[in-house]
Length: 354
Image (cartoon, rainbow, N blue to C red; front, side, top):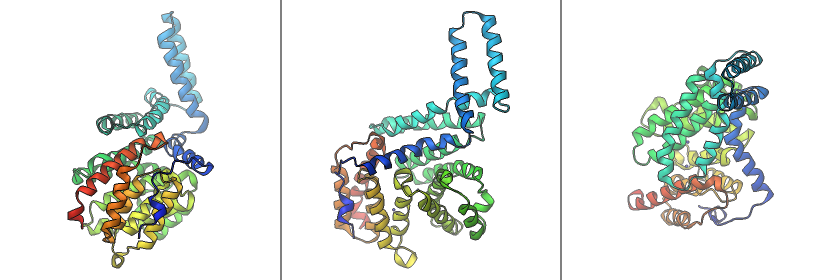
């Protein structure tokens, strides 16, 4: 899109080992790897150089005729070099570094209200770029990430029905990116054997599309558990996330481990839950993130400890989240602020949840 081991509750560790640095590089790649998809290597740099060149022509030329002739020449040369393009596509692709940096800046935001108010405008900007360049896989993935994050962080706890619709939008964007990897919507919802065959052909480059498709799809289903048709789709979601786990368990803060922690922890054993497996996945996510990602323990409490009816552990884990100091990784500022907000909300509901 969710018992306790003492090691998994060490939220105050601040060491920056070589393993954590490698993990951080992989997490950072989660934001930028999409920018290397849907655009052939040299073409992307060509778009950026072209955008900078046009900016220079527009603002620094003193000769109107030279401005016109040079601008036309640059556009024609670029279109020929890039295999044909529209002005809208050039502008959209040239904006890629700004979009990437915008997402990094959002992740580093510490004020939840600023993040909540600014995210919708950022999402509409990405969708505007997609109108100009609909086959841009990078922007499809960034839209999926953004809508998912907005729903999870600011909508689902207050308005579950609206969150359901937003998760569906995230799913739709991610599916387009996954289709570009060779997994069509028909295969995605078709026979399990056909899906497994298609997923087996994907390598690490397909991880972002698989992860965000499964995450958004799983959350969309979670909000419609009374619909048998949605429940029947869960095996496909699981297949996608298992492939992610096999190819890169560290992707997006060990997101596949967090998913399976909630997946196995949020159901009673008679309905397919497995508390031991859930605890293992939460422990792995905590280990990979060096216990800096507070959301791991929030979901441990929300899904696993609540299902186990372990109220003392539930209270202790969420209290520890609230008491955790600011972390050393600025890229976790926003997600950890959201985790604290969720922990506070869950503690306020403790009496009714147990």
